[in-house]
Length: 201
Image (cartoon, rainbow, N blue to C red; front, side, top):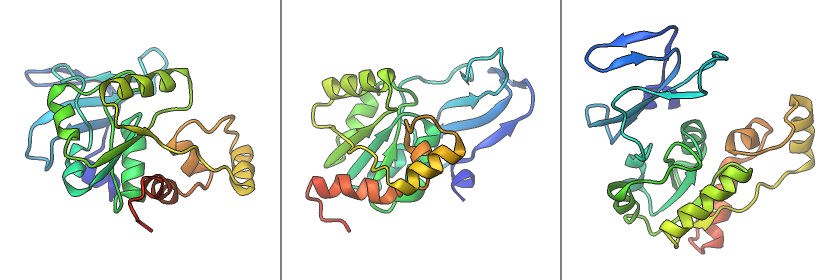
């Protein structure tokens, strides 16, 4: 259901897109502003071929857009994560209590148009990847929008640690790692909201 709503697709090989350019092979992630008949801001491909960049955008894609921005109008609070797949997972697990949004990477900040969009929220939290790039990205976001707060750290229970070891995950760096190891993403988001005294259970 999450994949269907986000219109995630798969492109098996290089494809020509009429009047635009070539679409790389891989998992295709479109960014719509609302319903699928609204403007298409970008198309990104998660590639898996060794000689290609991990992510490639289709020519004409507009950088510094917000993915899943439509969720903002449905919530008072938002959670900013690093990439589209973390965003979709957070929306799937905790979309009933907060909007999940991303600008697509740790170092990408929303342009002025999307920054105004964030102003619709009463508050927002940010959880980029737990690495040097992610920390730098959090600092950039907070310089741009000072009222954004860091998300609380993941609570790594013995069960999660065991699953992490079993799956061979060296370090839990993002929402997807946390979820794969059995972490409760909704409880994590709710803990942030409760720290802000939102009163969500």
